[in-house]
Length: 141
Image (tube, rainbow, N blue to C red; front, side):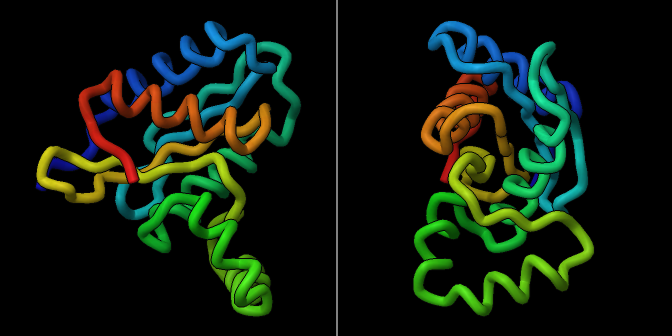
């Protein structure tokens, strides 16, 4: 397995934000984490509010930590809310199971990390993550 490289993480963010601008979304923050949930790159656009880093990072960490998209986590938490509340309060990193983060996978389907976004609706956040991953030559889940 080849780890997620910093230049690819930066490319994911640049492409995600380009997609956001094309779609006319509000100012965003985008975080890319590696497979261990450690930050590789982050950018908060001019005009994005102060909590965008924490939210984008929390979404990305939740996705990679649980091995699925934050959309799936959003659906799961309706079935077992106590588990998710306990998890969010007991992890060392931010853990936000809210739509807007997806896994980054290589051509062999190996999870390299995750990208999370914050600033728009969950669907908008997720869409720019997917666009950034695709533009960098990876797949998502």
